[in-house]
Picture (tube, protein in one colour):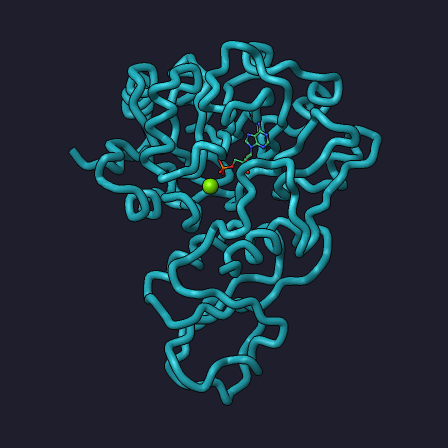
Length: 321
Ligand code: AMP
Ligand code: MG
């Protein structure tokens, strides 16, 4: 059986049955492809950690189909309900006190749980058909580039992963914003395409970011600096057309045109200088550049403004050695 299957009512039904049986299924969300298991089945969730080579200290996001399921997983606050109303289904994950039924392995033993309703129609159909919450990190080996297409999943995870539901490329392309609502003020643990400003506007109060370049956030257990990284070394460059090494095979990711004097044979991949389409295509571009196994991937640094925060965060992590 081919393991990449086009998502349709029949394959979604089969995937849902597999989830209920404790097996793993990779599926598309609007952010990146997820590697899903029944969140209430500790043995099934353990298989996610094994398949990814993910440290047990890094908790998972629980995906739910509807707001009614939220109370079974977490203890939502007034702020949580307001944000759910404003941003769900969508790429915002809320960290809340957990309910007792959530297995320890999902939360890495902690008393809080991360939860969201995804907006991708196939993710929602799978959640509804499965009838259980689905714990799902990105469907790639730990620390490598997240998958935004079914074939990225197939390349990253071994043949032990039996089903990848193909829903085409992901629209958002970067992992969800993770917001901790168990502290005051609420804190962004991972920036995403839902911004701190948008969240603050809904809550009518300040949101801690601590996530400008260079800062680390201690509270989020899974935020290792090296993450989302290609296998070739990646360097960020403010002045990209002046910093190309004289020797070696260099692949470039840029949003401005090169001067005529550029060394022939240099592999250049262009993305638009617009945060949303850039984010949507960033991981695909990195997968493509990395596939050539260059000696260096040189990436043109993006602007240091609010709407580029999530992209800058991922580029910084990808460049950490
Ligand atoms: P991923 O690796 O893409 O699944 O991302 C999950 C993110 O959510 C990681 O950064 C985790 O550290 C974070 N996360 C999940 N659960 C919690 C939690 N209970 N408290 C804080 N951060 C969490
Ligand atoms: Mg991940």
